[in-house]
Image 1 (cartoon, rainbow, N blue to C red):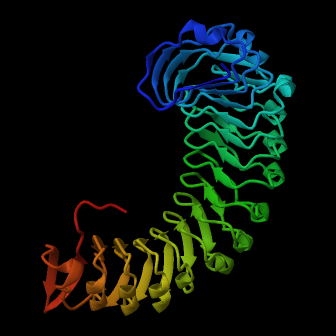
Image 2 (image 1 turned 90 degrees about the vertical axis):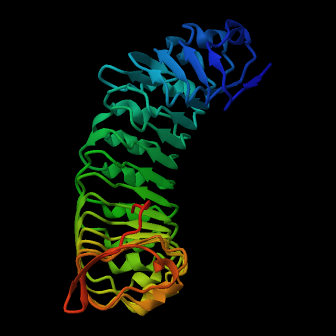
Image 3 (image 1 turned 180 degrees about the horizontal axis):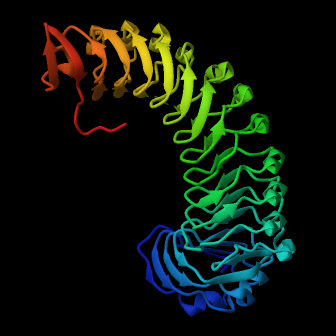
Length: 401
């Protein structure tokens, strides 16, 4: 047997010893089960031809055996979503891990030059990334270490991994800034560093990643402005920067990303107008809430024909809600609360049958509430003064932005 694949079942117990005696085995893939126990100490002495080891989403525990360093043909290692801890070998094909202090990735990686996938997420390593991370194979395309208790800075040597296409280091306690050596990662398609303590600025070299499709930097401490060259990222589909300390205006080039599907810049310190928001014709989520945007909501909002979730709450916007908003038949949630909007709720919204949540509370709106379409039979709380509706609060249940 050269392949043993039993993924996504309901298997439990430990791996039978006989599996580890199949010296010809090249692929051992048993993720998404309930398998437990520890791996044998002589794992790769018995499986010297192993190329793929997928153990993710099980209940393995203990240490990864030192003998993994003998798996010189290893191309993919996946041990995410388990309970591995303690000391992990300092020479896993040159990739070393140490649960107590440093996630060691040593120069003996020369034994594993074909490695293309390295998945470690959701194991309690509680470690720092060492400089020797740069010794990993330049053929490495996917590096995943989400929610591993990583802390400290991202080493400059990470930029040596020029083959990387996807980097996942989210939900850790990483500090410092994004290393300038990331400029070398010209093949990068996805960068996920959300929910860390990363600060500094977003450097302009990020605009050189012409294949970049997904940027997740939310919930960090990044400051400064969004690079003016962001419009060069024409392959970008999702840009999530919420929960940082970004300031200044949205660069005009960002509005030219016409294929952007999701933009979330909420909970920052951004200001200026949103004049060209209508350029996002295929976007399904746009959240610019909790900033300092001013001016009016442009009529071009009606051109956003793919929009489902839209929030401009907690800003300084004024003027009317454009009638053209009713042209967006895909709307599910609209939150325009806590601004200085005036005028009436557009009756064109009665034609948006998909609308579930509509929040315009804490504005200066007047007139009545539409009674047809999604507004029919919905209850709301009104404060009326001299025949006008103020502080309008119409929030439909069971929805959250």
